[in-house]
Image (tube, rainbow, N blue to C red; front, side, top):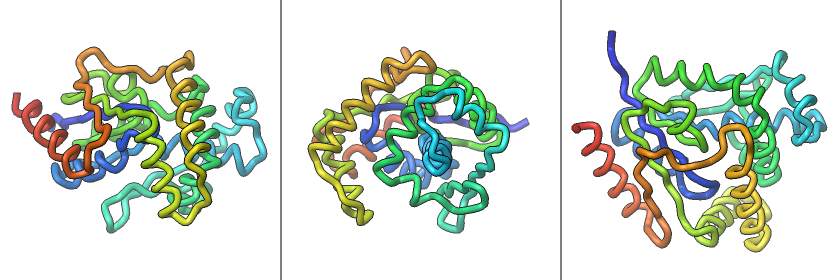
Length: 226
């Protein structure tokens, strides 16, 4: 039986996990799994149903009938589907960030999605990013990276990303939301954001995308050879 390789990339909101993990997956020929997009899709469902994302019982009640799917298009990228609709762009609305953070703190939601995430790693060589990949989802990952950057740097990147998507954005509000998300992610009872003991800490503050990608690619190749 083939033993697949797995790479876990964790870190706070706006650290560049998704962008870098996509590029790394392409370079290495691995399947890219954005777990944050999965939680955002659950958050979008709660948003559309008018449910308070902090109401754990109400969100949990959505799970049995949740029609959520993940497919890979001709571009090789992950597309999220909710009730048969491609919501890959919809889940990136700024308003959904809060919903994603809140629903991801609900133990029932995390348990509901855990098996699906682990199955992808059993069946493919994967690079998976999120908040608890190296600590909870794939604790035996071959390579673990904890990616971070200064809050101001992360807010700037998120602000620019939102503007490029044509969404209204205010830097001060984005920074405030980043700091609030950090607090929620690190203090939640269910699988809080933290660096795994055997994860390599990579701070991308002030780095260009090319420099960050080069550092990560060299590190991963070295650790996979070890």
